[in-house]
Amino acid sequence: MSDQLIWVIIGMGIVTYIPRMLPLVLFHTNNLHPRIQGILKNVPFAILGALIFPGVLTINPDSYLYGLIGAAAAFIAAWLNLNVILVVLTSILVLYGYTFL
Image (cartoon, one colour):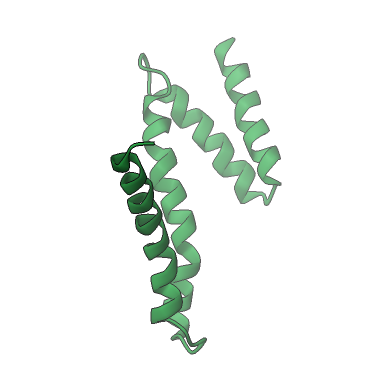
């Protein structure tokens, strides 16, 4: 292995470690304000939405309606408190049926 590759691996390890370590150091107490706790509980959902939404609009280059129908079906299934697997299957089945229209 070259020296440059070793330094790249070490650098990637440090960059990965810092965001995981900082919250533990900065928020070492459990006495966070309830409003901040509520915000932090919603961060994973916001990030997931930000990652998925562009794919909804670009899944079919000919029509963005295809992605919106699948997203609407998944949203309704999730609103009905279905299991995550059932939410995905519902969206797939709705889009499968939509392709025949």
